[in-house]
Amino acid sequence: MLRRLLSFVEPFILLLLATVLLASLLPPRGAMAGIVATAADVGIVLLFFLHGAKLSREAIWQGARNWRLHLTVLLVTFALFPLLGLALRHAPGIDPTVGIGLLFLTLLPSTVQSSIAFTAIARGNVAAAVCSASFSNLIGIVVTPALVALLIGGIGGQGSGLSLSAVGSIVFQLLVPFVAGHLLRPWIGGLVTRWKGLLGIVDRGSILLVVYCAFGAAVVEGLWHKVSPGDLVLIGGLCILLLAVVLSLTWFVGRLLGFSREDAIVLLFCGSKKSLASGVPMAGVLFAPAEVGVILLPVMLFHQIQLIACAVIARRYAKASE
Image 1 (tube, rainbow, N blue to C red):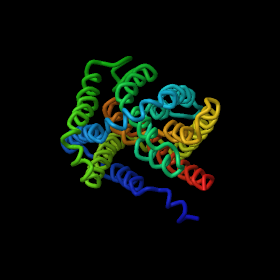
Image 2: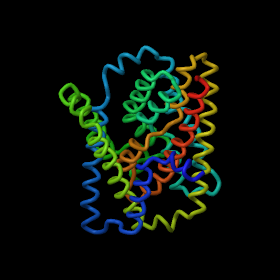
Image 3: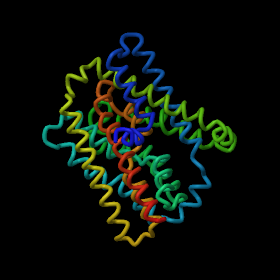
Image 4: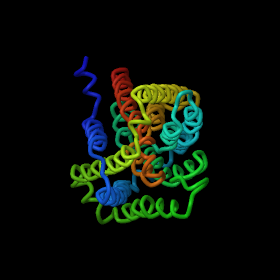
């Protein structure tokens, strides 16, 4: 039983947990905190540059024709999810900062790699999944910060709305690297493909660096005095409830709109996922350093829960189609 459970836990999750433990025991302080923060900013820029370089223009044009499916995925991701997040934010017994983290989770774009992988396992429309997931991440660079400003009421503790410095951070740390990577794809696309394994290490290493910086700053500010084991259990339970509701609704909407089995699978997996890869660097840009660690807790828990649940569902779809 334990071995089967561990088979659903990807190694990156274990690395994330190890990073959180390291940040809890040895958080960066003083001059080292500044060095780590600068390295994390560089990691964010590199991460979004690589995301832009990986985005295939051909996949966008090929999948753009299925606009009903893509529009439905986007509405689930950036409309249905945020509505549920507003309800979760004010759940009884939730710390206000944790509540912001739950809401922030629902404002993130969909995942790319795991959405496509689970769609393939379930024998769904893989080309459409590539397109939907790519659209979600591309649009999320603009829509997620805008929703944060609208629904959370401010960024980085600077009052309501988007401040000039916050807009600058979003543009120069997220949007410009993403666009630059995509524009350079004709020249570096082959390199990205050939060195996919190495770039994956850089990609995930950047996330780990941002997590270490965020949790280290939060630990210095007393993170584990604010969040108890009971809070973690409550957050995990709310994440399970959130995922169960969205999976049920996406399944129902797919049938209601008359999607084919293959397209309904795309809606199920792309519509129910939230991206840790986008959420970690975005939180680092959008929120004050002392808040980021707490805000990321729901994102990290939801990420692992969605992987386990979708792995089970994808395997059942695969068996049913045999």
